[in-house]
Image 1: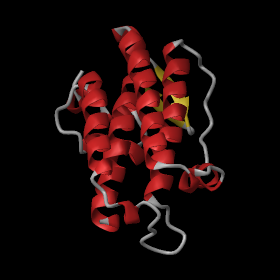
Image 2 (image 1 turned 90 degrees about the vertical axis):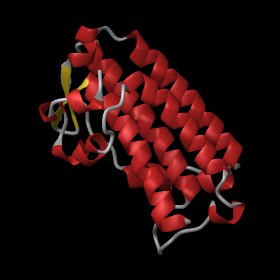
Image 3 (image 1 turned 90 degrees about the horizontal axis):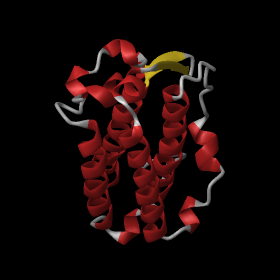
Image 4 (image 1 turned 45 degrees about the vertical axis):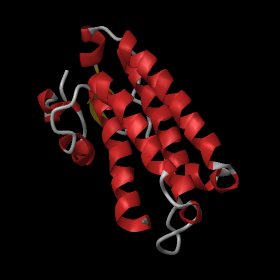
Length: 171
């Protein structure tokens, strides 16, 4: 499925910015491609920028990479539960609490990127296992309806959103 074929009714309005910037991408292909693009992009960032905060209280680049890892884990878990026809509403999570309780800034960059790649490989394996029926299943996460396939596109858009922030505010 292509991102421009995803109905707006399959995700909360909050995620529209992540989905609408994807143009016309195939979910599985883009999950693979955008990871490699992101890693290459991050590896070209000057080392002195990884602990930089563009304003008081803002996250560092390392914090954001850890945030991407944590968020992808949460979203993949949601996709798995919904794909299995679990009708239990899934709660939201407080991203700032997650970032405040990691040690991202004490980690080395390669360790963070390796973990991101491993999480993405797990996400890819999960999404490749879904049938067309499972991809279209709807559930509730963060008090809003969402489909399994929308979650895949949201993961991609979320990563691209943060890469754009790196370019605009950190470099």
